[in-house]
Structures are given as structure tokens and as C-alpha cells.
Image (cartoon, helix red, strand yellow):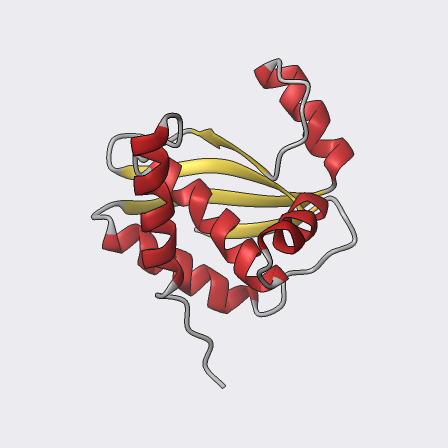
Amino acid sequence: MISFNYEKEFVLENEEAYETWLSAVIVSESKKEGEINYIFCDDEYLHKINLEYLNHDTLTDIISFDYSMGNELHGDVYVSIERVIDNAKDFEVSFDEELKRVLVHGILHYCGYKDKGEKDEALMRSKEEEKMKMFHVKH
């Protein structure tokens, strides 16, 4: 089950479409969907988590805690909406596109993909692009 939680005045529009998409991403990687919680927050909230749990004194767009068991994915994915907004501007993409990239990034970590080192980062970016194309909103 994928759930969306809010620690900031932000609401993900069309949660059902995102949930359907992320579930399809999990299946496409031959994994099973467990309990995955997305927590939308601000920079300050995520910075505290980064300091407390990872001992990193930096701002980041996403922190994911992986509680997966075997092939079944479980975890908490914290997303700073402020970082997503800034990154969208920096990368010259829409907020929606950058948000999708961050959301799927957390799932891909749970699937075993890394992003430390050039080779791993290139594969992660490729997988993000591939999975973002799977997102469809029914009108």
C-alpha cells in the first residue's frame, strides 16, 4: 500500500494516479508492494532528519528509509517540496516532472539501484526516465 502524508501545506493532486503509477513501477521491477509511505515536508523538516539519522548537514530533496523484506518493498520516503521546486528551476523542468523523478527515485532505491558513483548514477537516471514514461493520467 502506498500512502501520502503531509507535514507541509502541500497536497499531491490526483493521489490515485501516482499510487497506480508507483505500483506499476514496483511490478515492472519484479518486486512486491508492501507498505510505502511518502512524507511531504519542507527543507527544515528534512534537514533535521538528515542530521539526526544520517549525520549529514546538508539540504536534500529526498531521504528514503528502506525496510524492505526480501522481494517485498517497504519504506518511508521523505520529500522536501522546497527542494523539488528549486531543483525544477535549476534543471529547467516542470515541478510535476521533478516531483515524479523524486518519487520514483525512492522506489528505485528500494529495488536495489544506487546513485553513488558515475556508473550507478547513470543507471539510476536511465531508470528514472524509463519509469517516468509509465505515468499516465486518465482524463
